[in-house]
Length: 375
Image (cartoon, rainbow, N blue to C red; front, side, top):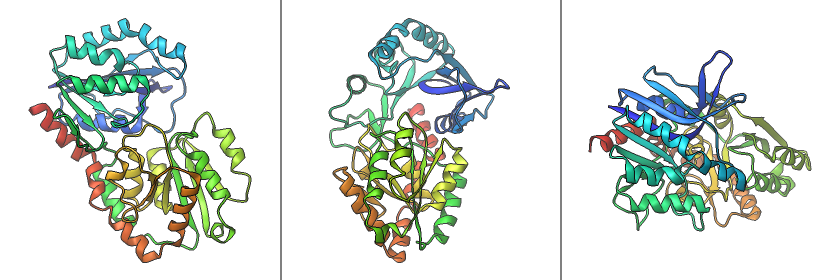
């Protein structure tokens, strides 16, 4: 069976001609190649340097089909998405003609016109993957429109979380981010991990105010001196338009903030291993951020917002800490709770994630996708 995947995943061309893209998505597609004879991935090709988080395809049965980048935050950028519609649809039609089924990954700018187009004009088997917050209210207009259309059509939609009013064709799915050897390595790390004299924290993601980076820095800047003396390093992994502002804000006190920029998956995992707690006080549109499951796997307890489906996996005081509401005061409060945890309680909370993280493996995900395409 041949599959066409349509997404907004950013791809780049290395000097040697190798095509690379955002690591987690390409790893997922590499694993999907185990159950498909051929995969075509239609996505954006950017003319700039690839970040360290990029990875190549590992199967010669995967073909990348480039699109010109479109979309953005401004009105003009959003209009460019609509202007690109004829070209995108031509590429989709040409590729679908060679395929047996498709997957469209949403929400995405091109999803605004591709969801109705595929619903009305394609008879191919297929499913939609909605990676955002399925219950976001209010949601940005484009996201809300795509979510509404996905609820009204009949093909399978995989979503984050389980909800009382969930339609029959909407299936709860975990976003994969771990390979089997990661699980084995995680068990070994957790078995040896202890709360040390100095406690390390980390954040991985876009360095933006909406994602909570400002709240993290301000919380540590307001932490009482007796607790601050127990804080080691605070790792901030990623990049964004506000990074210079965050670096300046981090200099207010003598606190060891470390700005890493983009890192490879291996290096990010090493950050989790070296950290005791993972902070993400986000108010952005989230489904279930993969970084939470990654952190959990390596004994890095989550201190995260109670939004979307996050609270269905993170139970406050059991396997992490929830922020509700998401305020600087509550960020300070959970940091204090983490610092004051006994080593015994810390190890118990780490162990409470052992079974949960297995649901975030690529093999678990691929086996569930196999059931969709066979049914």
